[in-house]
Amino acid sequence: MNAGSGSHADPEDIDPRLVRSRARLLDAATGLLSTGGIEAVTIDAVTKVSKVARTTLYRHFSSSTHLLAATFERLLPQVTPPPASGTLRERLIELLSRQAVLIEETPIQLTTLAWLALGPTASGRRSDGPQDDGPRSMGALRVRVADQYRGPFDQILDSLQARAELGDFDTTIALSQLVGPIVFARLTGIHTFDHADCVRLVDDFLTARKMALPQ
Image (tube, rainbow, N blue to C red; front, side):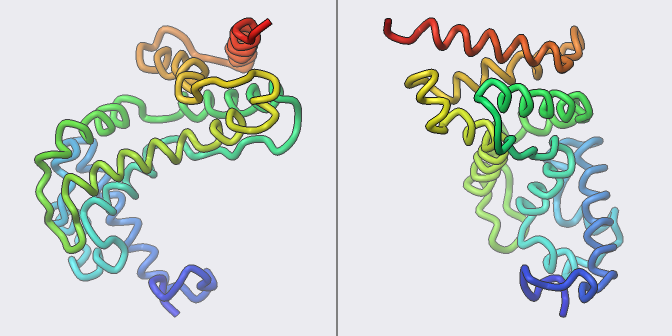
C-alpha cells in the first residue's frame, strides 16, 4: 500500500521514498518562499530545486496551491486544541498561553510576508498545474488557514458556557482582542507575552464583556 491509497494506511506500509520526496518538495518550497516570495513557489521551480520529478510531485499535491498550503502549514504555528475542562477563564488562559508560545516560536517575518502576499496576488496568480483554480484556490487557501487557526478559540467562545457568562458578542472581535496584542507585540518586538500577560489579557476581556451585559 502506498501513501496515496487512503487515509487508513498503516505507517509501516507507506513507501519511505514517498516520505522523503514529500519532505524534499516542502524543503524546496519553503526555501523558495523565503527568498522569492509567494510567486517563486511554482511547480517548475520546486521540481528543479528539489530534484523531484513532476509526476512525483503530483502524487503528493494536486496543484501549486495545494503545495503552497502544505508549505504554509510548515511555517505557521501548530493548531493547539482547546482545553476540554475547566472554567471559561481557565480554558481561555490555557489556550491563549499555548498560542503565545507558538507565536513566539514562529518565523514571523517570513510568515507575515507570505500571508499578506495571498491577498494582492490572489487575482493575478497563474495556474500552473491540474485542478488549480487560480484566484479561487488562493482565496480558499486564505479562508481555510484563517478558519483552522481560529477554530480552537471559536470552540470556547461559541460554547454555551461562554454565552451564559458573557451574553451575545462578536467572536471575531473577541479573538482580535485576545490574540491581537500578542501578534502585534511579536511583529514589533516590543514585548514577549508570558503566562502572566495572558492572564491579564483574559481577565481584561472577561471584565469588559461582563460590564457590557444588561443590568
